[in-house]
Amino acid sequence: MRIVVAKMKHETNTFSPLVTDLARFESRGSYFGNEALQRYGLTQTPFGAFVALAREVGAEIDAPVVAEAWPSGRVTAEAYERISRPILDAVARGCDAVFLDLHGAMVTDVDDDGEGLLLEHIRAIAPDVPIAVALDFHTNLTERMVRNCTAMVGYKTFPHIDTYETGLQAGRIVLRAIKGEIKPVMRWARRPLLTQTLCQATDEEPMAGLIAAVRAAEANGALAATVFGGFAHADIADVGLSAVVVTDGDPEAADRICVDIVERAWAKRVEFVYRAAPLAQSIARAKAMAEGPVLLIDHCDNTGSGGTQDVMTVLAEIMRQGLKDVAVFAIRDPAAVETMIRAGIGAQVSLALGGKTDMPAVGLKGAPLDVSGIVRNISDGEFTITAPMFTGVRAYLGRSAVLDTGTIEIVVCERSHEPWDLGCFRSNGIEPTQKKYLMLKSRIHYRAGFKAIARHIVECNGTGCTTSDNTILRYQRVRRPIYPLDPTVQA
Image (cartoon, rainbow, N blue to C red):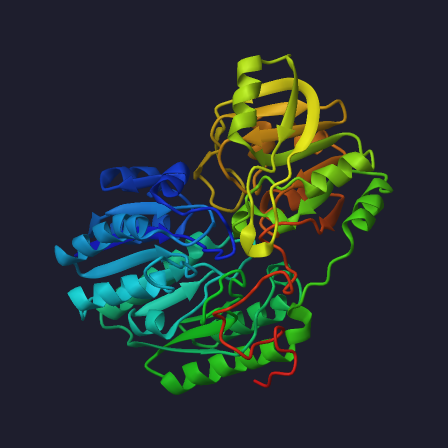
């Protein structure tokens, strides 16, 4: 048996000004052929799970590519061709199955449905090849994606700590189908519901009940059941919450389960709208807390949703209100890093920090923050993730430096990276458990590594292109009507 195993992932924020070109993929790590297998074959990811399954059955593995970029704007045509072409070429060489580690929310310059286009091309090359797909919880599901694969399974956790298990589940369905043990059929459903990311944590309502429903469906015989929260920062027709179910030759059951899941979601639609407190009020509340660490979540500039990671609004308010013993991860500012490296550890520097990026889609201009302090640490920005999310994957922050203002230690890096692992601080000489406050540019994923050490969590409604305020996001292509953009819409 010969199995093509590949990873091609991007979550596209169409409101983000950051260009998703080849360089952005390469900055997070893009590998081809044997290097892809060597780098990711033993990681706790769907790709790693697929490799393990292929080895388990003694299959020859063709791993043409592992490519992932941090969320940002539309994927350029050149980048899409470079990372998708090796997969198509591998399928054209002949195979018995295809195992794909995809995201499900890739928007490109050539097509709003990057994953659907890839799957459609694979089907054109090999109409009968079984295809297993592992998808992110934030998939914006399309009919084309479902139509062109054998079995798809999505993560059931946010933060995503079940990625390996998701790959195992999807791959095993296809391997059983090849053996003739089962005949997978899939059905999907959705409702006109645009859920907001800060209301999607899977261990809290309103999402927890939906996750319980899909797990119950699997316990009662479904081969796989998934509810996708969707990714609301993609201005495309197919954005929003959906469900997909795989059964063994029983399409009626798959339909019934899908409809039940999306109806449950629709009944909770009001709970999927995030309502933020004013920023100054949130920081004042945090200042009054006696014990730390207190997590200050700068969610409107979340790298993991396409944020620029250089918006200074929340940090400016922290400084204005005089919070002390603060560590910040992180401000992306390559020029500031260069200045600190040239100055050297122990040097006093003054910087116009961050604010280098305009965000025209949300009407924001970059606004640097004047800060002064001592350079406390310089590093290469590399470490291996040990948190339960993407365990074993290598992190690349680019060159990094720490600016100590006397009350705040700020990690400044060359590349984007969301903080879900304590190594973000430790690799830069800061022990996060010893800090009163940790400011994190994240939404929910920080919980994978930081929730266990937190005494309090305060969400800070700053500014940026990952805002949860629908009045700021100027949707033009989303299918209408849809809740909550159209509050009176009926399912």
